[in-house]
Length: 89
Image 1 (cartoon, rainbow, N blue to C red):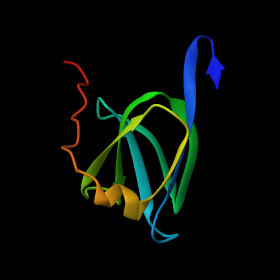
Image 2: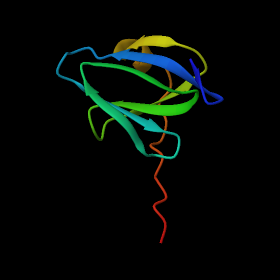
Image 3: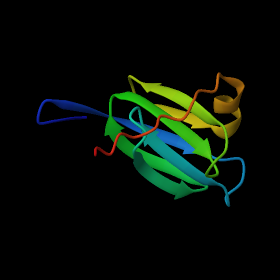
């Protein structure tokens, strides 16, 4: 989907449990969205991070197209450091 020259992609992430918090952050460490059990959203193409429960291991997502992942699929890939947001002086 394209809006105002920006390309949005559908991202679906399904947690292993319907009670698991899914935290989606951007590549600068800012929270984009939090859902429980299933995250189904349209976001700009780009780099994101995802955590299954706050303060757990962080995994990178490079979004270039519409995708659907399970927690299991994401956890089979590499982890990454959580970006720390720069909130200024």
